[in-house]
Image (cartoon, rainbow, N blue to C red; front, side, top):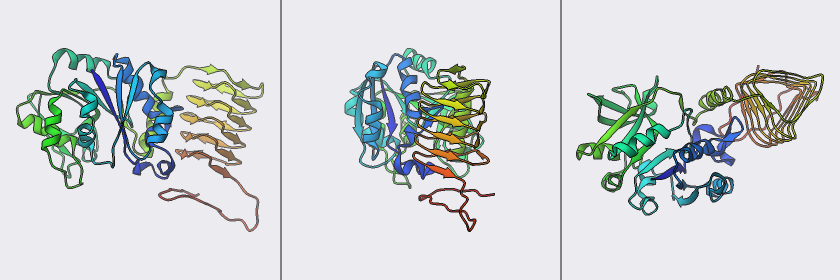
Length: 353
């Protein structure tokens, strides 16, 4: 069995972060989201992974390499434009070479992994197996209608959903899916929808089986979802203090401090993770916060946030529910006249008290 990871989207819902970084490489608990997907696939014993890439190919290729760090082979499959999930399958036919495969969306997280689901697919050998989860906002997902435990109909982002069963970003197929992706037409969005391809299989009498997952799953395409994923993953961490913590600092709960990090005269209340060569000085870092590498935090309070690499936060009274990008400076100024002085990129959001 092979695996196909889709990493070609533009990440418009996470701008401005994704103006300069692939959304699949934004870190959750200081690990790129894409790496969680790779690890889930490796856990299944799959050794051959294709990654569909778009404009951010160079960045993803630099981060993942040839796959040897996970003991797998990685093949990069360029997609000229984000023309839909079914289009990504269509252009991957040569790589799949007739084998059954798992398709995994690169910005999804499934806390408990997919090993039992892949084993179920391999042993029962249906034509397709789809993962479903109950959601409160089904109009934002592909939605499945079930009848007597079978998949009856699928619809992509319906305005009036007929169920609350959303398609999770993991699919399993045999080679019949390629007949389907060749047969369907672009949707009104101009994309080849994977829901249409699976519906084609259903209409042709193929064996399409649903599997409803009860564990935690998240599509990390939006800020709130990213912060929730960060919170959930941090809650699974263990205490590990490999960096330097001085005697005037207090460490409480599940806190992971990487080698080379320095904590001085500060309180860190977990779950928190602090990356390599980061300095925390005269500050409070509250629960559910991830601070990546080479960050400096001075005289500030941060909680329930993600801070990316090489950023500096100084003299900020309180920062929470935030995602701070790479190489960002946030500081308090004493310049007169007193004023907010802000430089932000396109699609940014700033809330001021």
